[in-house]
Length: 128
Image 1 (cartoon, rainbow, N blue to C red):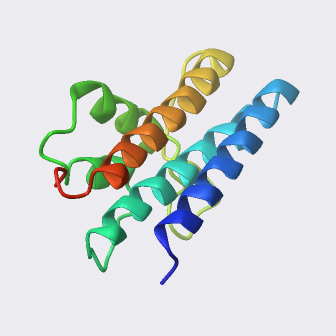
Image 2 (image 1 turned 120 degrees about the horizontal axis):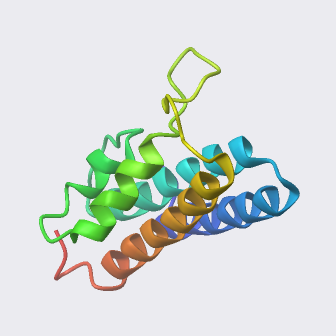
């Protein structure tokens, strides 16, 4: 099992890569990377709480925190639109609308979920 600090470091690095991809116009890659980073961030928090299994759905992971605010839940839903389906090279999102606006929102959502996980890791005795 990977330590929470290592998972968070990987999440930060992947989000940085997502931001670079966004700047280069690689929108799909940015979205998929942001989703992956958010999964790792929530995995860090959940594993620190003794959770043995972690979902590939950011929303499912975030909803395990009863105090998760609506903004975090919405960010998680947006990220899950770009979850790669198991066994398929295609993302979950059907019609992202304007790809550039969508990609910017998805990368921002990734940073929001990273912060969500960091807060919970910083105060594990107060967070579910």
